[in-house]
Length: 260
Image 1 (cartoon, rainbow, N blue to C red):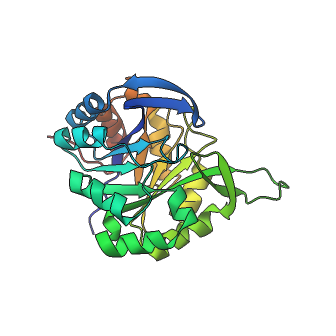
Image 2 (spheres, rainbow, N blue to C red; image 1 turned 45 degrees about the horizontal axis):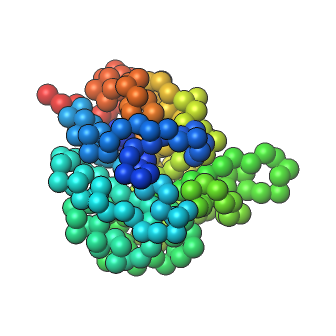
């Protein structure tokens, strides 16, 4: 059986039509224009792109689709959109614009049956469930690894591994797992959280939150058992290029898609 290619996925958090990046989901700073960024990442050889309308849920609104339409006209790799997706109709509208996958988070926790409904309607391969998590200290009375919603601002009391298994059972094709503790810190992915989820499910798990150097990408796959690595800061601010990341991983024996 052929080795499964590990994907390199830049993440573009969108607020007010611009790509932004924060630390632990706050202190956002402007990074660049989404279309310009998308074109650059396609040229560099990104395997996929993820766009998250990060203020949509907090502002209780749907995804702003003006930038989605612009991106869809230009990108040459598959891309996912999340943030503000509330129902099947919202998903249908995004797919109609050319989006390849939709990503849902808070609404999946509030209404798990939407995951089942969407996977039946569109196919699990087009449905990503994003899971934001936090690591609680022993004796806190909360799950060690807990699911957060509403842009990471609201704890749920739900244990991450159990939720990941439920999501898979409901038909999602992929989990996008972000550690709030690690997000934007550049100190490395939460390997405990990533591995716990990746070993519990059979679907693809994308590690997110904390990439700061090439070694972190390798660790997410080798130790965290992730199927894909997502990063933002290191790509947005030119610290690491996608070709550089792929060459490094290939040199470490990780199967990646390299351009000829």
